[in-house]
Image (cartoon, rainbow, N blue to C red; front, side, top):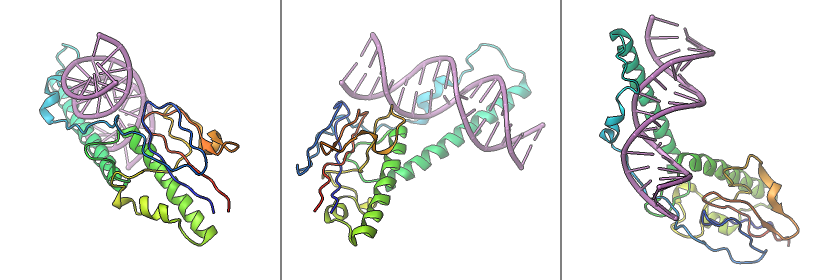
Length: 189
DNA sequence: TAGGCCATCTGGTCCT
DNA sequence: AGGACCAGATGGCCTA
């Protein structure tokens, strides 16, 4: 069968290499950002116009309304991101993915689920470890080796998919921003 | 202290 | 005309 597993690695680890057959382990989550909450009046002092110029009353009203709408729009966007975070595999307590990480994580997670379905179609079953650790998303990983299989998590990379997969050595190599997701083994039986 | 992340403001552009 | 969307600018907070 084709075995897939994933690894969450430290952001500062520039490369992960795991040989086929090795146990996968969580390397580090020390660089998870602590959750922070921004409160409304935290930014109050930014609400002054950048220029000291006094706007005409009508224009000022329009601008104020536009600012309110824009704020509301961004809050909606953030709410949608929160919903997205909530359906991704759980992270350790007090950790929250950034916006860009959330989007990349979601992309990788969709890839995982797609791949899982493909494997189920091909081999008639979903490997135990996938069921145990990754499915369904809402159950999270509870601190166990977690997250999503993906060939790519490099925030600077625009390449997709399998380009960094080292077929000869059987491991994925890639530059990493915060996490690395890699396929640890790929055994044929 | 530098850099990352974020919220907010702002003006431009497009759409209804 | 007014709203939605977008990107640049700005400044605060946090962490290494």
